[in-house]
Amino acid sequence: MAQLNMFGNQLSRLPEFSNLANGNESYDSLAAKIKEMLRDPIQQKHFLPPLKNLGFKA
Image (cartoon, rainbow, N blue to C red; front, side, top):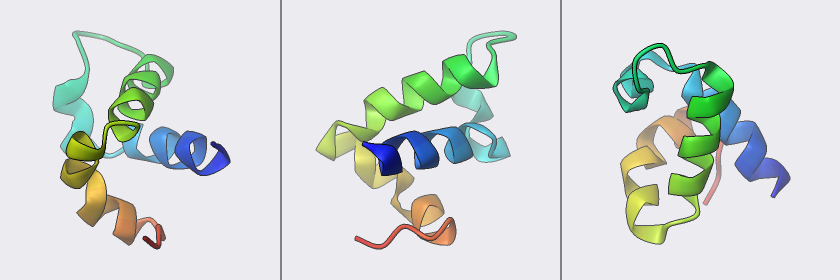
């Protein structure tokens, strides 16, 4: 769970995921959305390359 929070927060700050935000959505709100997506094994695949760049080891 701690990794989910850490990586969700880090991913929300990356420009390549700004398209997931709605309008002027806050980083915290976007991070919450990304964390939910990371819980889904199918959606996780979309995040794997940037996660590995951030230090995630599968």
